[in-house]
Length: 306
Image (cartoon, rainbow, N blue to C red):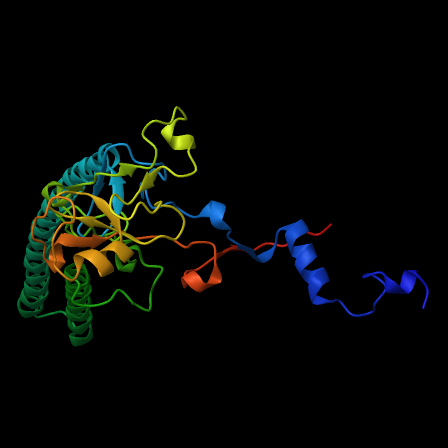
């Protein structure tokens, strides 16, 4: 076989590799890419800003935030609730006003239909020289008009769908309804977990610097913080937890070996409970064994012809 036969474009079969290459170049179909360790969040980074925290706080569920970022987020949620509540109240008032107008229109239509029917019956009784077929025609027209008004009343009240056969008649044409708003939730929620969160639930976090005497900026250090008990660097996939009474961050290995047997803070000696130990939520470590989703996909609906 010559050199040309070994090229990937020499085969008569459109291979999987060629399809993936065309997808990447022409940007169509589902594009997937594996995430590396540079795409993951460190243990001391905020879940909102994705930057190392300076004044960190943690939620009862273990999500770490910068104090300024989470307070700004909760304040924005309160402002958004006030705005949505005003819109909801305007909608309630508008629906109430429309209901009153509908009731008034229905009452007027019922009165007018009764008058039309009464005039038809009275005219039939007074005019003794009118033929019977003309009387029946006049009464039938009045009855049809009354039925048409009754249909409009039921349609306005929502008792009957506007599926009239004569869809071209303006009186029978359905109207487009506005999007109905639901009553907004008053609770402020954690932006990551979505569970209710209040300012008083936030717990101040105290990290221990690995090298306080270093002249390198803290954000540029490869190892910024460590466990104050075991001196283990808090980086990568090292599991850590926050002790609620003091806010210190220690490794889970320290908790299992040193804290769990006596349930006391190894530094202050304060008694602890299971509720005082808050494990920090970690992202994927970059390894498949971390049991996290390490791939990102993007669906592109259109294919471009070249």
